[in-house]
Image 1 (cartoon, rainbow, N blue to C red):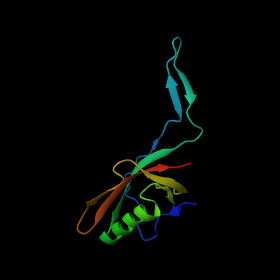
Image 2: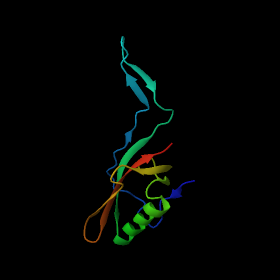
Image 3: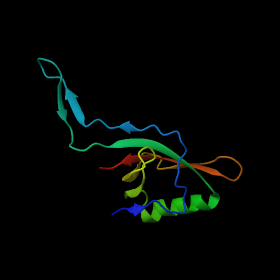
Image 4: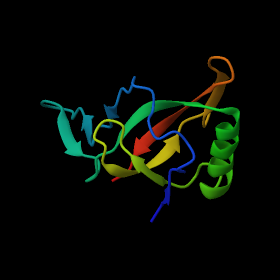
Length: 118
């Protein structure tokens, strides 16, 4: 079982979630005839960018979680899906791994991309 999203970090993301579903098929053009489509995999995955407003202390907790618990961001973790509210296994993907920027006052905006795993 993957590690849970820490209870000391915000449990609700900012509302602007745009989820994209990765295509489970591949298409190719044969020498003759219409394009052919085949299943690439038997699993479906989706990805979405996510952002949380955190305090300075919470950003330290987040960075420790990613570096230590998630093996520098290589391991999955569980959290509530922001759209479905179901508990799902996710993994931080992309480069840069995450971004931290000043938000308002003493608050920080922590953003990263997640892939929902099957």
